[in-house]
Image (tube, rainbow, N blue to C red; front, top):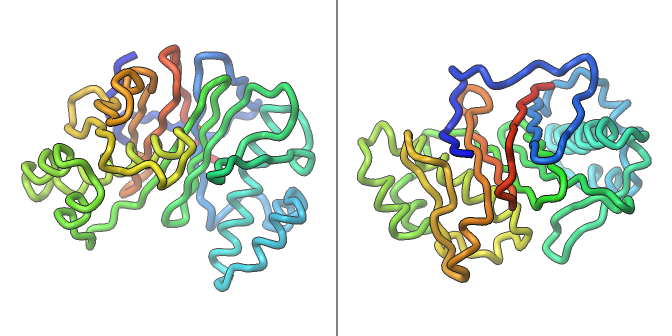
Length: 252
């Protein structure tokens, strides 16, 4: 399934359906939510959380960050509860040695990943496949050349810096979100060097993992999606599957 970057003009985001959607095999669902303004009261999200999550929320120095954390975890539990048909507070998580969360419930094929930036949250769900998502707020003040040279492969940095100056910023964030989604999907966190794999960057070309330094075949095992979430917010999703047939985008 060949994919290009989906812009806001494509009108891909559906409003939250009245009946919770069914996640089929070979399908992925993406949800975006404003973590600073929720349709549910914060008090209700609080009742969803585990003791560990509540304790962690109290460690945040700033109230804005605490609210964002509670809303993100509450939203994740709300969405998982919709797919699993159980109470949000009954959901239990387990974590890999690199900190990637998964469901502790037995016999569950549902996989998920979350990301947040600038008050916006992105939640991805798929069955029977490793998944990673990333969302980034496009910040005009960053030093594109310096960061691309530091974190990206030589070929990625060269591709971005050969573009017209007005195009470099968006291309940088498209590259960044695709690479972050892959790192999160892979499940090894920042122990996976950003310069040891390459993603496509240019508009109009297939969104894909081009190369990984450690395995000639792995690049063919991942399906990539890239999209705009809202004005000045870019997102990406990757799944370790070649069978992804459909994507659905929802906004809370």
